[in-house]
Image 1 (cartoon, rainbow, N blue to C red):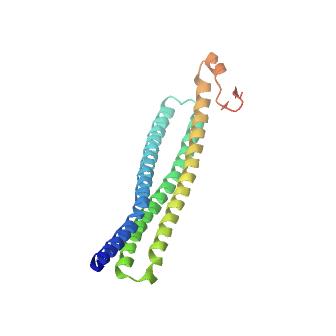
Image 2: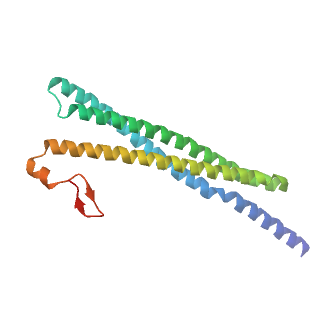
Image 3: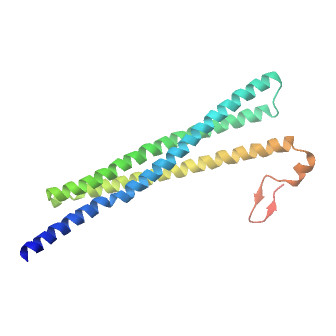
Length: 193
């Protein structure tokens, strides 16, 4: 009975340590999801930059040969978009670094939990806690950066839509121009002139 009790206590202790080591896995998974989505966003921004450069080169050739409607405005919109895309790219790259760092810190947290339990020195129990907090702070910082990036993306989209509306008004037939408005206010359900 004494030996069985000791075996159960050892098993219970081992299970507790393994459970504690697995706990950072949820945060590791969160880091992985954020890394994947941020990587996708970064790829889309890079694709958009390449597309804008191609459009700009084509527009310049056309302007030299036959002229382009609203050329100066188009050029200004492209440069504005490239500026915003550059800012977004830098923020997304910083997010990726922060999320990868957080991922590594959470893995280190899991390892530290196992080492502290294996060594059996409660005086070192602060290490996994500090590592876990550092990883969580990294996730928070990366999330703040993503929020900033989403505001820049929204500004860029609004600027592009405003230009498309201006271009549409310049090129659309008069009857179509009179029936559409660029700004719809869902609170008053009225179109702004």
